[in-house]
Length: 372
Image (cartoon, rainbow, N blue to C red; front, side, top):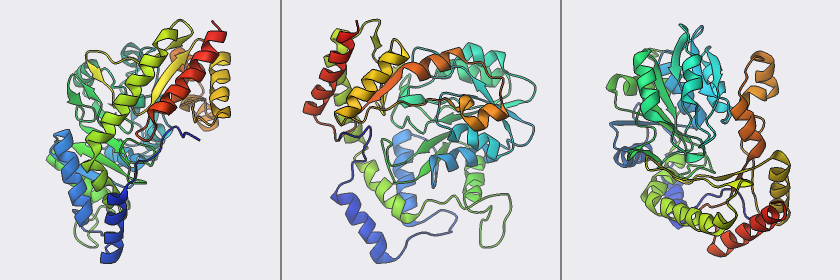
């Protein structure tokens, strides 16, 4: 079986986890976090070239904490795509605000700027662009819209660590950027997340939010929760940061090979993911687009039959899940429906071999060729 994603865990991560256990320093409620939390945050600051990194226990917690820090609350509206994992929308509901779903563009499945403009109201307080599959959103236009309308811009960069827009890292454009270190992400802590910002006051607020609003002991100053990253998780993330360049190199190598092998069938029946001059991918997911739902499902089923974990993200999109369809029944997002019916992600993570990439591409070519 070739899973769609698999964490690259080596002996260094295992040794670091054992060190935490031997020291019996599993976690801490200290404002700055434990030793390994601080080491991980320093490494991530250096990599992203930001002033502050505040680690938390999941990407969902990162989004939730960022919205709390931005003072988004009941009565506010937040613009975000429906074509994303439900955590983005759930985090908005968790602070009492209303998620307003925006359509995506067909080129790279990120938020559609023109559709977003139409959905701004006097209740809109923030925009959450999602760099889906590691594809950067159109940040110049989004920043201009945010400035012109006095809106907070909080990036959902949970899938895009290492992706860049005009040579600047995703997650570093807005007021805050949110990252995930779930087991399947390009960098893993098992479970974990981080918020990055260049604003000192926001960083200090986030440190309180992740720790029940406390600074020293039982002195809760603002609303917060236990969103802390344990030392065990930070130990893994810290070692992962040391090999992050290798992780990206392997993903890029595999994606390049996959594209070279599939280029011969890149027709109306299948569209391959392409970087542009302005957008560089971390290749978190290699997502192709088929001409119709029937062909997509046939290809997925065939790959799965041969033990290849090709997967569909995200079908249904958030606004068509039972809970959100009941709560917000009026959303019309044609490009989102189009993508949900046609996209398919293929495994290219660091542990996939060249031979396996070749096998995957041969199956894809066989199925597509039969239906041209």
